[in-house]
Structure formats: structure tokens, C-alpha cells
View 1: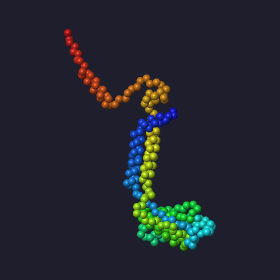
View 2: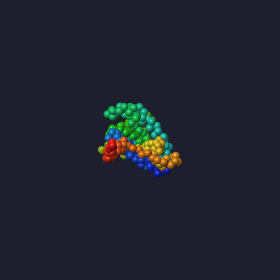
View 3: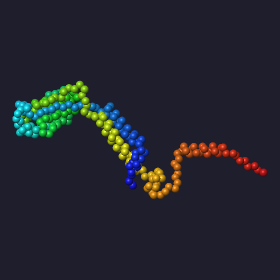
View 4: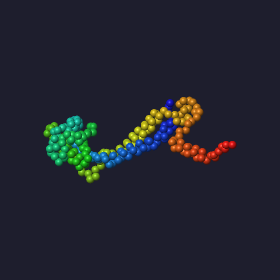
Length: 251
């Protein structure tokens, strides 16, 4: 039988404390973990532009063939950056980073915007200073090594990762974590409430008997608690004590 809106609201009102408890526990737990236990991660980035060193910015004529070639080369450069030729060189030239080539490959992310000659190198680390040192080192080594590998000199460094006094971590996003936890736990608690109501096939009211069986209710037996029996027994005993005693005399 289909449920009406008032039936859904009745189910939610009946289990409102269960819903509140689940949402509260999930939200508070997420907040505690996000603010006290999760390690903040910082991000540093550099930008490289693929353009010939002798090209003049703002020239009256632009060689579109060269621009298109540089754009196509970006995909090649993105793969070259993560090769041992570059990463091993970074490890050798910057031993103070205390990192090996395999770890560098995992840390360095390279991205580019379509139809542009700009590449972005991104490194994330629990220390912003270390992230900046790593991304700057990779960018410099790549810029110096690419002419030897490709026999072209068309990589320029647009900007390095600068030192920041109070960097802002990129993750965890604490507020977002709490908001997601609240929404998800609310949906889960609603689902549990409706599931419990669906699995409960007991008839509890006269209206439900009439609704599901189509029969009138002739009588109802009240459910009593153990303390109700004790109270009833006590009252019965007091009544018996208060009754007058009848003595039968033998004639």
C-alpha cells in the first residue's frame, strides 16, 4: 500500500531521536578528525611557458605554426618531466631535499590548459617550504635539461614558487568535510528510519487494523509494565487490609 506524505512525516517524527543521534555523532566525529588528527597538506606551483627564447612578446607578426608546434610539444614535455633523466638529476643536484626519484614522480603533478603554451607544475607536501623547494628544483632542472634532450631552447620559467609566511593548506577542507558528513549522515539516518518502518509489520493502532485488514476492532488489551503489576498488587493488598472482618459465631 502506498504511503502518503503524512505517513512519511509520521515515521520521521517517531524516530527523530535516532536521526538526531546519528547525524550528531557523524558530524562531531568528522569535525574532531578533520580539525585535530588530519595532517594539513600545502601546495606550491610553478609555471613554464613553451616559447623560443628569442621570440619577442607582442611582436606584430606571430608564427602560428610555431605556436601550434609548441602546444603539441607540451604533451611530450609533460611525459619527459617524470622520466628518470629529469628526476635523477633533481635528486643529484638537490640532495638537501631528501627524496628519491620514485617519490618525486608521485609528488609532481603537471597540468596544462588546452590551446595554451603554459604548463603548471604542482607539488603537495605537509611542509609548504619543502613543496616550494621541490617544485622549483624540478622546474629548473627541466628547463636546463630540455635543450639537451630535444635540441631546442623553448622553455622559459614564468614564475617560481615563492616563500609565504602563513600558507593556507589545500587539504583537508575541514568545513567541507563537516558539511558532507552532515548531509550524508542525514540521508543515511532517513534511510535507516524508513527501512526499520518497512521491516516492522506489526499493527499497533485501530486505524492500522482497519487500513490493512478491513476489520473493526472489538477490544484492546493494554500492555502493562512490571511496575504496573507491583502497583496493582499493592493497591489490592491495601484494599483487603481495609475491609472489615466477619466473625462467624457458633450457636
